[in-house]
Image 1 (cartoon, rainbow, N blue to C red):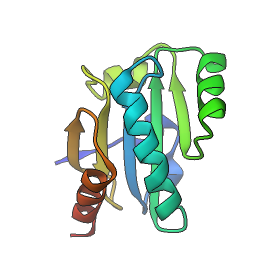
Image 2 (tube, helix red, strand yellow):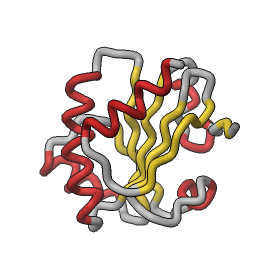
Image 3 (cartoon, rainbow, N blue to C red):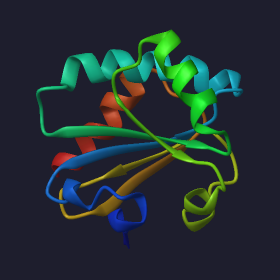
Image 4 (cartoon, rainbow, N blue to C red):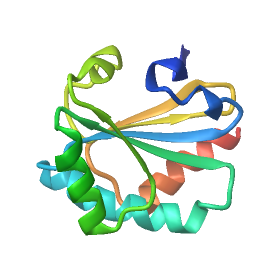
Amino acid sequence: MIIIDLYILGINHLKGKKVFLNFLATWCPPCKAEMTEIEKLYQETKDSDLVIVSVEIGEPLNTVKSFIDSNKYNFKVLIDPDQSVATKYNITSIPTSYFIDKDGIIVSKHVGAMNIDQMKAYIKTLDK
């Protein structure tokens, strides 16, 4: 059992909510494909108790902001320009996603891109 330290991400206010935490980079083709799916999921779940947070690894704010704005993504994207957060979570490949229950416990980890159906299957495991 791994309990995620939401303070490291600056999202400690998410304790008590289900969290889909995704690590990515704007230059990564599988990440780009997955982000389109994440946006679809966000639009379907934005009024639920699921919070979607992506962490962009290793790029400056202006690059990330331009990418997010040009693609009209609405889910929360944090930046990790020095990769310190990615290092703490042992991110060795992107995209990598964590699914965290309301108690802050990592229930699942997925390495590689997912489609919306795969994301929904992981999210269902957070209700157990």
